[in-house]
Length: 194
Image (cartoon, helix red, strand yellow):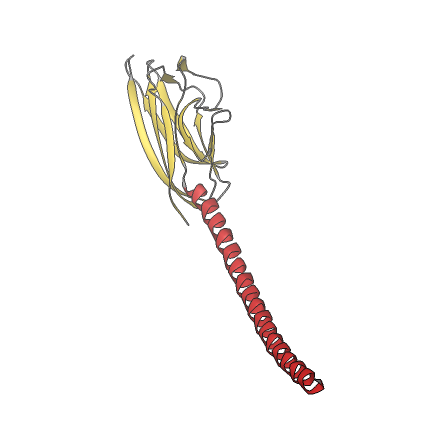
């Protein structure tokens, strides 16, 4: 009986060794899977970060606005230069144009396209100055010789840094005209980033 018990103990010890080996192999596989999972989580976090960066960058690339001046008819002439506030905003993708100030502020460094159409009604000079930040970069004026609607349209392509501002100024002594038909307009868009 003792021999039989010794034999059973030896068999159980062998089975125990086999179970210990299987347990060690399982622990090794679990450890390996945990490392692989951590590496995948790191890659996922990096991908999410890149996606977020691209969404932010792409949001800055979508910039376009179109606005008309007023419904009130004649604007000016005034004794001094005034910044024009195109208050009737039809499009403002990227919210870069502020109708309360009349300023367009570049959200990203890039090349931008701006266009304006001026309308005059009275028999007098009409025109505008185009400013980049505090620097006058363009002057557009026209002497209206008769009463009635006359138009002046021009455009400009500018390289702007993020934060640069563009605005239009009505020179003192000149006038414009606008109505519900939106004769005097200002628009712009980002062509591409730099």
